[in-house]
Image 1 (spheres, helix red, strand yellow):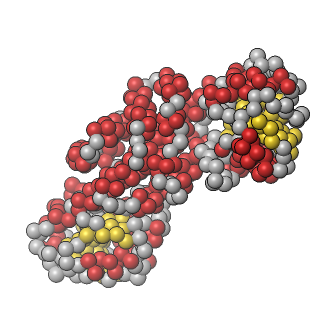
Image 2 (cartoon, one colour; image 1 turned 45 degrees about the vertical axis):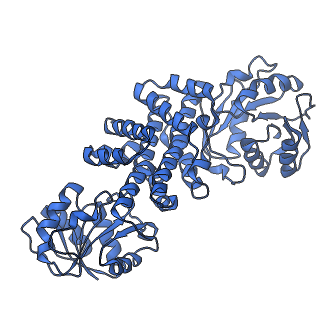
Image 3 (cartoon, chains in turn red, orange; image 1 turned 45 degrees about the horizontal axis):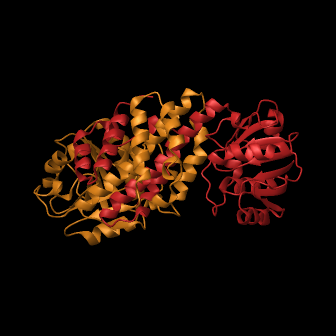
Length: 254
Length: 254
């Protein structure tokens, strides 16, 4: 397919590179600011364009990967330039409807669920893609399968839950790492000592359901150890987190 | 070294196998119950013995890997049979002092920090070992280095913090996975879709400090998304967890 990227952030960057590698042609990169558009366009070897007054080149599909709160404005502004093309957004937390009533019915969601960092390459074939489209599911399926075998159809309601689930499995997990690092810092131990345990904890849930993989004082109901741990925590909020998560572990039977 | 294992649970099993593979000789396995002692002794090709009246064979060192609340009783009961030998325990959450006053000063802690499951092999060379001993640190260092290069000295106070940090980085992380699975279950999505994100989240903290690796609505201060997420959560405790962790992320500057 010939594709245009609207946005030049982490998702647009990694998606653009992966699409190009899969044999699609990126015709143009648009971004609100000239420098980010130029940066990504250079990496992809295509023209850049910027600003809300920009003229887009024709292509089969347009992929909008901008911040959630800019999505509607970008869609309203640019869809009328190519109402025959397929318009997609990549936002896990935004409904399909954000693209409705903007001048086309050829709309869809193309959500790669991963945490992207600009300078860290990712293997797209490992990333699950979640698709939604009222009229173009065939095209979306083909596009998605050119990147990864992990393709799922999911409506906006399901995707809301998926995004929430990702907050637990990624953002909150990372915060638990951060709290762990804070505890270690008090006794001068570097967080790197935790990495084998971090890795094994992640590996385990490839084989066991998370609820079955649970270990530690809370699941054993070991109140002595838990009380000792809470007493070690200086900050009230860390004590609250310890207490709440321990109670939740102890009473969870999934 | 010639070594005796007291205990036949997950830690004793994995440690016993690793020590044997590193060239040490396991002389005997003791356990409270005959069946568990026999099970591990058979795997290690050595005699089993059980019960609190058991006679232990002589060896250079004795490693006690029993439940925290049984540790003191096992130490008190068996140390007098070999007061010249080195006596170690493997419990992250127990102080060295639990072995004091039991008839020997040759005591120490040999704590492998990992989450062990009985039927899952682990690579001991990846596991950090934390050592403490008033008089036998040389012997402990040599024993530890025969298993892994990741050897640290840490006193009981430091180890308390380490164990608490491991609860955050392992037990609470796993519970976040479990809560994520629960959210997905509501929309019929299998937890396996989360695994690439789980793996990448763990990989990231090999390169970045956890606080720097933080992504998601809470760190961005995106109150709109957070309110939408909280509204999706049916259970009050899950809402509380969402709220508390989000607040903690938002105000954390490590």
